[in-house]
Length: 424
Ligand code: SF4
Image (cartoon, rainbow, N blue to C red; front, side, top):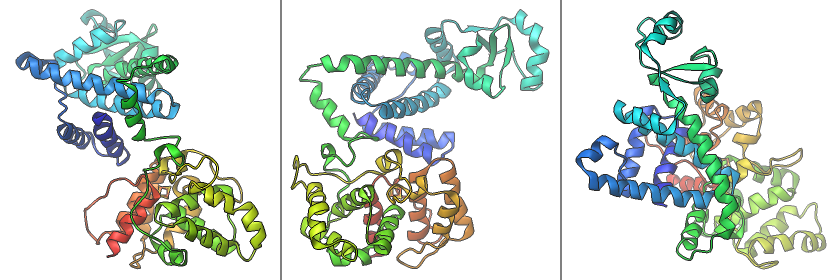
């Protein structure tokens, strides 16, 4: 469980911050040290067999608990496979060549080391592709085993086989590893309903609460997440909105300009306001006043008040609904025409986002220069929406020239909380 929370999450965060390979390995090591999880190769095990037995045991337990906890949701499977693949790559590249060969022999039975004689026959082609300094360390595998290398024409093909340089050998196992892990997770998902083990079920519940792509974000299941300390009055929301992240500023602005928000916007914004301290009474007052020019008292009570009370657990199944996480906002229920919910970094077009960023002013008056806007747009272009949001925070709230970074924003309430803190 700790492995998930700290190591895999660190990988995720480091990857989206596009750290170099060595930096990524340093992040992984730091996270492993925090949880006392070693990742040594077999050669270290020859000298310290007991230590390595312990390391492997913890590693295996963490990994298999995660499989159980994550197998029920395709988004979680994708996340787990992605982080485990990065971890595997980092480890594979750092073990000795002896360990690598052992690993390949065990997990890629149709992969063989190229014979010297056959290499002589294709050496010209190999040199053309890999340069004159090419040596004779090549693996031969069916071409289907390395689709990424074939796709980028990074490998020589002959009679259905790919000649993979040793340095690229990881491609061979990456494909296998992903297929194997995805397949096993699917099988586990099918068998999970039959699991009735009191030792395991409470553990799984705990892990699910830390689920990075929880589809229940905004549901009752993770009611402790995303809330911050504090109290907010209806009359103070306008003033507080300078500290909101772009998604909530966009909703607030449209609420003010049209005196209305559609259901998706009311849910996203309403639960956010709840998470930053707006009580039920204040929420009813806030929405009532915000809609006043368009919606009569009677209509408000009949059509809107129920929903507000429902979000606070006073209607329906009386659950204490949590705010939407960034990943939920980004990955589910994309806004249609006339909607204002969603994440601007994900759902607004590049021109509109550039315009928003160019006109953005932080609470201290800081504005973004063109270069800074470009940095954020590059992150958006690379699909790193939460990192772009985090970068916006760092560029506008941290002192100029400060190299300090913050953890990637995962809840809009976090952005708000940090912004308030920085302004004090
Ligand atoms: Fe809002 Fe999260 Fe998107 Fe930032 S990353 S704008 S906090 S949804």
